[in-house]
Length: 391
Image (cartoon, rainbow, N blue to C red; front, side, top):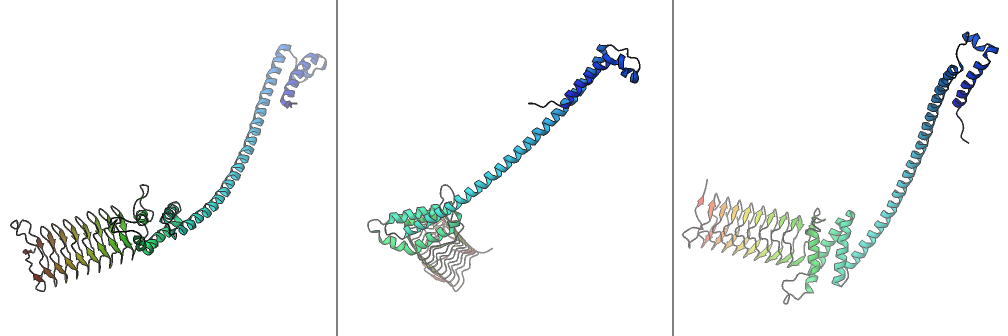
């Protein structure tokens, strides 16, 4: 049963009291005692009583509403506290679930990684290839494994590349690269899903590898060690190589044309019929290196070192050579026609049947020697130089 507010009783009391006093006042003289003679009619007295009762009811209504508001606020507060507690419990449950998922995921990744590593030792090339794909996906999905997988790929190339070529008959397929080797190269150096290689931050050690007919076209390669490698018909054209080492490497018919090579080291190597056409070479070291039938035509060579090298039938036709050092080198039947050589050094070297002067077109394609160093210790054999211009 709904409880009646006290102000209602009080209002009823006021009306009843007013009626009672008016009706019995002549006998009891209550009003007369306090207010003197009563000249008011019953209607007037009841009107006053009704106003007073209405005011009391209004006040009562305000009190009731205020109490309702307080009750509602208290209920809302309790509901909000309950909601926050429920949210807190839910967040704890999510964290717990996330931890469980992470533990399960880590265990799953470890399992995938271990299984994939096991595939690399399989004799079946298809199984090995599956292992490589699985390892790469682990490296992409989990950064904790990226460098580990990178080192595994490099190690696999160093230890197994030569063996993989033994399974290919090069007399029948001379331009074929084992798919395992090419896949590893693609993952290590080329973009994946329109993103740069995930291994780009790591230095790759491919020393002592055998790489034949490999495609490095258009790749950006930094800090890669190709020392003591055997490279044959590998395509580095249109690529950007920075701080790469080819120390004592054997390079046959490799293509670097239209590329950019910066601070690369070919020292003590053996390069045969390699294509550097329209190359940009900056601070590259070929000292002392043997170069045979290499094409540097239309190339831009800046601060490159050929000191002590043996260059045979190398073509620098229309090349732009700046501050290059051929000192103490042996140049045999090399072409410099149409080129511009600025501050290049040939001291203590031997130029044997090298072409600097154009005898066919009345000197149109004579090489330009600007501030070059050619002294009395430079041995010229069947070689005629154009006038060295000094400024």
